[in-house]
Amino acid sequence: MSREESSDCCASWVASPDIREGSVAPILRVERLTKYFSGLAALKEVSFETEEGQICGLIGPNGAGKTTLFSIIACALRPTSGTVLFKGRDFTGSKSFHAVKAGIVRTHQIARPFRSMTVLENVEVAGCFGQRRSSGNVRKQAMKVLEWAGLDHLSSASAGTLSVGDLKRLELARTLATQPSLLLCDEVCSGLTESETRAVLDLLRRMRELGTTIIYVEHNLKAIMAVCERVIVLNFGRKLAEGTPEAMQNDPSVIEAYIGKPASV
Image 1 (cartoon, rainbow, N blue to C red):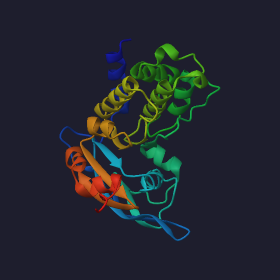
Image 2: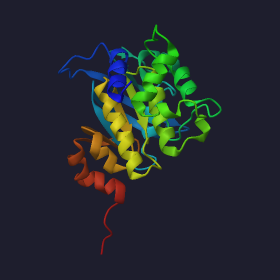
Image 3: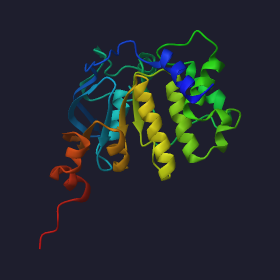
Image 4: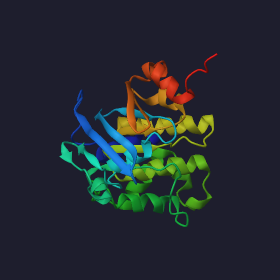
């Protein structure tokens, strides 16, 4: 089966039935999210919307609140206050497995495969979860996903032997196997070479084409500029700015958040 045929097969069971051509309905709405840890505010009344079929960047200096925000959206962490609405339903404080079943899936900065299992087995396990379990052969579906990700030649290899670049692609393949509607993608290009980064960004674009909405956290601003239609900037737990990548790249407040105020003479 060719890469194009595997993409067509994946599209038949991955794309959200809620997506319609030209749809701009928000799939995710975050309203005034706040999170305190021992009296310290990690998030302060953060609000935004993400439209279906969009790749939205989420950037900010270290400690800005990006990971905390992802944890709350993925239902791994309960907010102090505020609301998370996914497809119009209130998921605030739900269990993480409920989020996965609904179509919210998350990657992590460090890939976490089952290292003693094969690449194919890792994708098979992921395929047992998600919002729409396939009624077909799980192994067959897993192979389609590996072909889509360009990892089919490594299907029998132990996940623990993969290179960093292949581990990142496996991480995306495992998320695709869950048939996600919303992917929370956390620094998937960290530690990669330029060619590996291009390959991973291509997978993100193709996931979007299959119907997956993506919120993408990344410190590699070149990668953000390459794939995102919109960018949200956090700083000190607050939403600092929001707009196109080009606008954020030239926003004085965003520049100051990253490099600080110029020294006075």
